[in-house]
Length: 353
Image 1 (cartoon, rainbow, N blue to C red):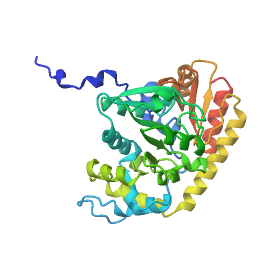
Image 2: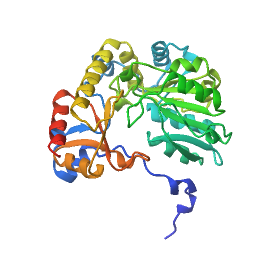
Image 3: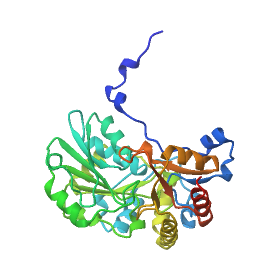
Image 4: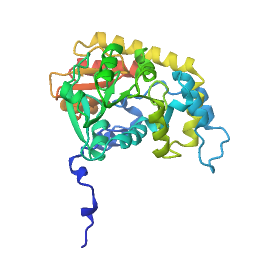
């Protein structure tokens, strides 16, 4: 039989698929636990959900026979981050935005610097562009190898603050120093910034090599609608709009995004409750690192794969961090859920799973 595998790109051989962890259907198939009985703490979803206004917008009368128009969402996001609309770009989730952004800068022969451990999707996109990831250890002061920071073959540097999966934030001074030293474009992922209470997006006004990404999935509770945006220097925003998909986000997603950004009170209450529960949970787990995200990075004595599987058998799903490059084999990431969900996890974890 004739095959056509030779048409596949060579880069696919080195790609490790993104792993979001087991979903409800997978857990049900493996252990027979119905989805409604599961405590899902593995994907950093907002347990309080979106603003009622966002839900109401989805019931509205929208012309879904027409292609979506993003202008209202762009204006709402621009107002929220205090940038002119011309400097705000958007995509189908922050992942979709990063996908389009990397293709502006990376191709075969290029390199991208990824301090570890961090979000695995950066590596996948770098490799898919044909570029080579270069790794360094993530430190609070961004003490990265000078040979990589100044290398002109390194076209992009990926950072995440609060960092996923560890939860620490970067300082303004450390980021500013890096931006001044490197010829690369720095992408700063602020998907969890609302939980930290402090953004570094303002540095985009001072540095033409910084893009700061945001999402509607976490603090705003719209993970199922896939909507992300970023603040970028004018020259990058212009090139992004030239090449990114014209209709990346659906009309319902955009409508819900506008409504959610118009109800910041709901978002702030949600963030406050999650942050309080996060800090309370950490006080009960000595192995949990300080976190300013919506999750905890918990170092485990046993291999994390065994800990995660033991919890899953009890209907509690957390993220096994051994699937994340540089995170080791003894850590799990626990999303902050509703109080009763956090209690269920805590009881099972302290009992030895």
